[in-house]
Image (cartoon, rainbow, N blue to C red; front, side):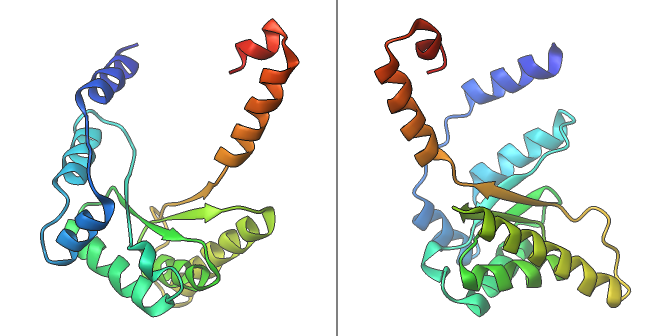
Length: 173
């Protein structure tokens, strides 16, 4: 269909290579990531209801206050309604997620390796919404994503499928 064709064309035309740490440093110096903005604008222009994620520095993963500070700065600098801030779901990140959601900033919780941590992320999201409601602020339109880290599981399953020596198993690779 038309939307799938547009997506495929955009994906093939968009060859974005960047150094994440350099982008973060440039962004924190007031030079927003051109790639993120262009992709985000493209998503809006063709009518997709989607988000572009940009991450806080991974060096801040164990510092709640600095994670919140950088996330708020990224959100302010980019100034786009379809930007989602990636926050590592460390113990300190859980508190940052709650704070950011309570301030109306969309969050993409990353580096989730267990169901227990996923539950903590979901609870932080709910608490953030409850704080907004208690303050009389709207909660509609606040997006959040919990990105469960599955590549290790996927790699382990691929190894098992390869050992099967079965065409049906190989077709899953």
